[in-house]
Length: 137
Image (cartoon, rainbow, N blue to C red; front, side):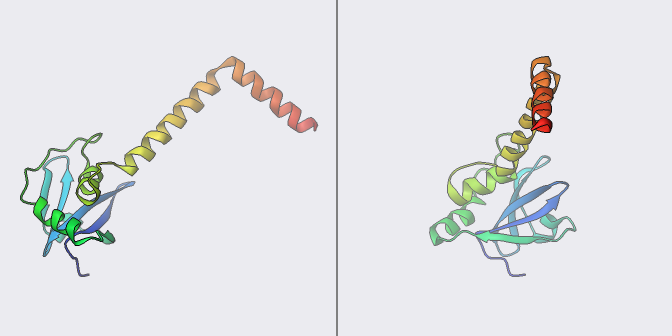
């Protein structure tokens, strides 16, 4: 696999994807809990798992930004505000965000709402009435 500066790469990490950005020949910038933002080689990034190229940064200006970032001051890891996706998206688009974190938070929120709704006597009664109405119709 040929990696070019600006390519966004990923590998599985449990139920999540770990992402990084290629900043030079066999050099990938990524963000981990133990080391924060740092550059490693492709083998170090892969951690023995298959790596795939998600997409490349289209503009040469953004590619140059990715290459230049490896010389900038690295930031520490924070699962909520500076995880691997935040790092890559900040470099690629200028906007730090984490779609996986957003989906995880939405799933937790939905679960909490379902639990609250199932514990509410009024909602439980309404559900039973609704079920009765549907089975009689």
